Length: 177
Ligand code: 5GP
Image 1 (cartoon, rainbow, N blue to C red):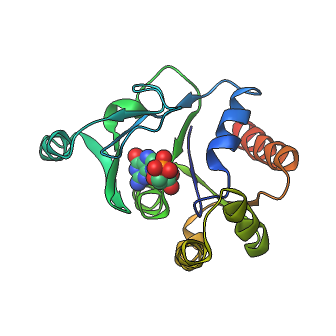
Image 2 (cartoon, rainbow, N blue to C red):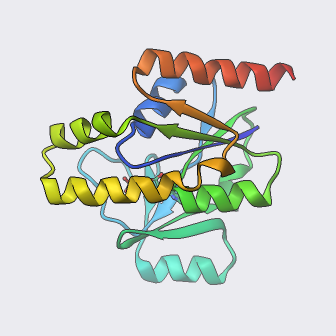
């Protein structure tokens, strides 16, 4: 089963996926990206950090099932990542890549993680972002929500424990159906 998580940035997708790993066995698909590695990230675990030159070469080699430019950087999922021995593979993708993969693969499951506007503003403020940045992010969130109908499920991430239990329910129901 391939599950794609997507949603506006700042909704807490990575936290949700990390927390899910404490509850069920799943494979987290590791993307390739041209963006700079952050201090807390590990190459080969969080992402494969590569140059734009290498990324372009992989595109030419038809290595990705999907790739997108997000902000100033490229992100892509390799075909290899979808082949593993786990029953469940989880992808964390921005909305355009997610929506493309979902339309091409009817058996993939799309979960859109959303959050109320005032909660998103609060989180972005807590992260130290200024009003201009927050305004941009809110516009982006609105654009991302326009693709919400491409997803099979929408989960509002108000409280992490409720979110995890909602997602575990979705997975359980998919497994038994
Ligand atoms: P970040 O730079 O914060 O790690 O990720 C930025 C965005 O890129 C997030 O929305 C994340 O879901 C998305 N992303 C990560 N990997 C991929 C990928 O392989 N393909 C696509 N389309 N988006 C990705």
